[in-house]
Length: 86
Image (cartoon, rainbow, N blue to C red; front, side):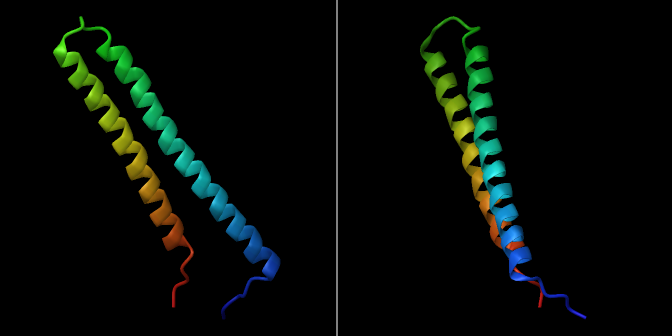
């Protein structure tokens, strides 16, 4: 027996899904910002040299990769969670 949701229950579930997506995306970008913060603190422990610029670039690429990948995976999970099994 299949239980059907009322329109109010469906709207509440939809709102909860959107809120969960927003929280996941926010967490991903905060983790990326944390990587920048701690990475730059680490990079500044070395004396300045041309290699410092490469360290800064690597930290930025890592942080951006974490944030974008997390966002894409969060959106993918959001889209897949809305499907109903047949």
